[in-house]
Image (cartoon, rainbow, N blue to C red; front, top):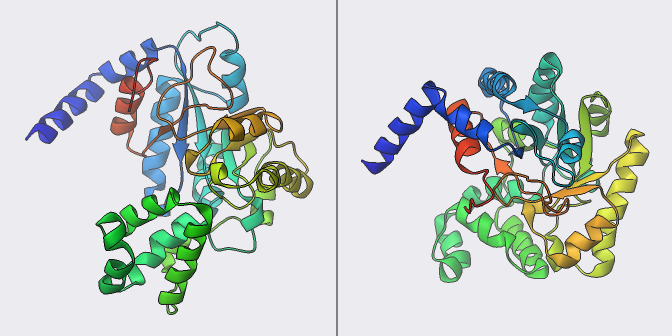
Length: 312
């Protein structure tokens, strides 16, 4: 009942324009985070972008950072669009809409996976785990986390020490030898090719690094950390002949050592910590808001999750 009442209130506030006014009042920057956008959701995604561009000011990540330098606050909310993992549907679905509406965005890419892996290990486990019989999932996970659903397992694996997570990935692959991606999973999670990345208009799409291979950065040693940060930048710049100055931490995970190393290589680094971006915020622990393609829900997040005092 409470959830229904909250949804009704949100719907009324959205329809009346109150959510938009509350969000604009915050006068901050917002970095929205997206991953996959399926073809059947293309028109809803287009409606979301039209709503955002009509209601706020959509700017490049660089422009947002420049506007929030020092103590200066923008006159209204600035919104930067970011897309993680370099997924193929970001080229086939997202990019044509961005190009048509002339809206800038940043795509964060793992160059070490291009041509080597179908997708990142997180999406692979998400797809592969349902192939394991429930009895096997109970054997492997019930004693560890008390749950056997793929989402809970994948999220738990993100926090494992790197060597343990890698061993568990290998175990899961060995236990699911007949696994194959469905057509929908390929459409959602396959990674772009170098040729597809090269097709993106540099005046519209900023390419950032999502590290070389999407590891949990706080758990890698110093040499591996430098490799994931510097070599991913170098490879992207060499293959695409463009500057790569921005980073997204895989799964948002970072610590002071990781942020310091990122500062030696990049202009900015984004997390998955929920919130707005305000003058004086560190460029290497930038908050983002995980958006949906639903304008009403995204408007609610912009109105309620962006103040300096907000805590998720």
